[in-house]
Length: 416
Image (tube, rainbow, N blue to C red; front, side, top):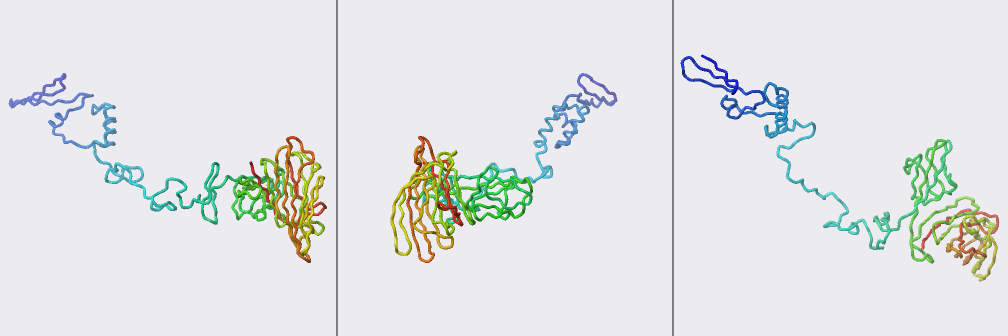
């Protein structure tokens, strides 16, 4: 047999000596991909190429004659070549046997609650939102009414913050804070923070509106912050039909000389007081106020009063005016600490140039015989300035040196 090599075509010709016929075999040169007809002629069966096999092809490019770009194309189309993917090929998770659906399945709302039948197109359609009593107005928010178990529209509530720096082991925090603001809050409407961390209700006691008591004493230098939230109520008589914002509550449980307010941010104020008792030597409330925030309580007031009351069935009616830096008023008899109380409201119309206050006071005492009295008074400054307003307002136990022994004072504000 003779062998002939054709370098131009890359073929080998085998010529048998018996002359039965030449056989030619073409060997691909480097960089040439054999055709399907060439593979079929050699009797090589078709097979699948996996990603690992494609990588091996890449590594053996020099041996196979396949370039790097051609090997990359094979790797990118491995899924098409093998036409199968197993869940075991995934790093994590599972892969269903069937192909992914064209669209995701619908999400069921069967477990959702408080939705009306047929869905809701507005918040008014939710079953736990009640706007039937009062339709919402501009600027209002939803507040939870625990009694009705409903969300109801209300004006946004204000808040006031108090900060204290603790001493070693301190548990009780009350009175003036580091900014000279006197602690006052509505029970159940506060947040208490210690060094910026919100405390659970079990970590402190806050039951009287003026005192916070920690369950565990603080460390020297700790910062206790109390955020007191206001409550909004409907305006009462003389309120002008708006919404009164509850500013503070002062609850007196021990001897207190006075209750003082700094007035800022509102044009009308209302002080509601109840359960107020005095010592045996005092009869009723006293009022002082300053012209502007820098006043000294020495400004002269001018007032008119009408009083009706007396012991048993007797009654007297009188009216009188007066001037001075302290206005006292009473219903005609003493209200002693164990036998009666005083209640009422004071409305402050803080109009620039001519601020004025109006008092409605009533008292009841049952020491020996029942006494009932009521006083109505109007007061202002004798010589107000053109733009002056009431800066500070002080309530005292009458006109003597007596003190309050108990009582609650609530301050509201209204912007007209």
